[in-house]
Length: 308
Figure 1 (tube, rainbow, N blue to C red):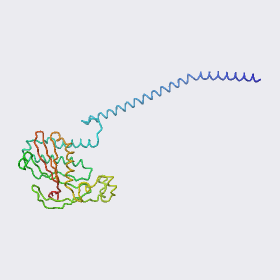
Figure 2: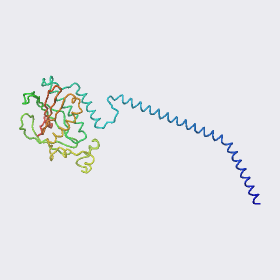
Figure 3: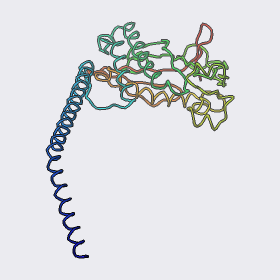
């Protein structure tokens, strides 16, 4: 009986395997067809995505080439913010001073050369103002001509000498108060004075001052972390503007400004050692030289006061 049952189960198992194989043989062609259709659809999707990416790449490349063609002199490399600012300064200076060259012929005409020197120094100070616009330093304004002499008249055999007054304007949040004295120096115009520096409240003007913090009403820790120091902490001795410190600061700034001006390609500017003023020597390609002495002052009413 047991043997008969075993034979029955074996026969049943063989029958089921045959039925399953037959069913698989019938279903296999349909599955292969479905698989081939699925692969084709995926292949078309991949080709469509690749074509779209290629199109976007070509459009982006075209836009980049168009922008580059509109910017002559672009090397294609990234520039720092300082380099971009210097290029802007050089372009502005080139446009404003186009054709203004230091020459021996122009130096022979005293009035013409004086005008030329004033324009050159004004452009130099304009670049200085841009370089220091994010600090709380004095703002050098356009110069006021004081005197000019040709070589030999002033004790300098080779140099023409030009004396210019540079009016200073207080930075934001500061006020200047003139303490006038008497002038005993020869060759200077006007009165000599000390300049007292006081801080001003800017709380009501903060929204208009690019998030400037009031030096009087903000904590010192916050001021140190969020903005440059006040003028009292940089160029002042006590509450008075130190002309020696101011001179050294402006000398460094003048060197930076000259480096980005187009005139530096054909003239050499030398900042000479001096205290309480700035002395420059300008030499052109022919070897002609002029000396420029810049003194600090402030405007008071309709006149200018020379700072001691």
